[in-house]
Image 1 (tube, rainbow, N blue to C red):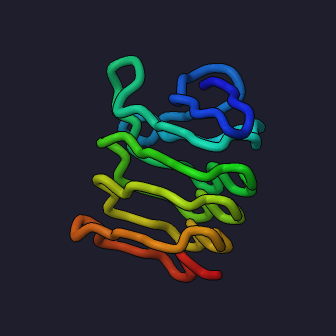
Image 2: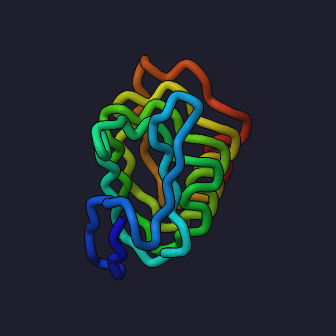
Image 3: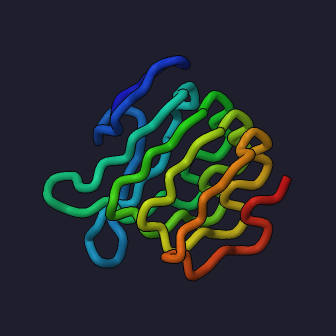
Length: 130
């Protein structure tokens, strides 16, 4: 992962300040770690030949300068609280997401328009609470 200051875009790269871990199938799950000053994040399809499949529990919670997220084509799950309190988030492309966890986008007050695809099979309680 790389650090970017507000007004910068960063393609997520592993190492540095953004965290990742393996799920039970050996695929990557991403989290924001301690870097809270990103304005845009692009999560890749794969890393080291393994799919990046989810944004982790509270993964980018409280990233107040985050405005845009682009998810890789293998990301199917946005876990609970993943973008909770990301006040400036305005854009997210749900691509192949099938599951959105509880309070995943709660208090994202600038997220005005959503395009949810027919691929989504589960939306947790208060997922988009304002």
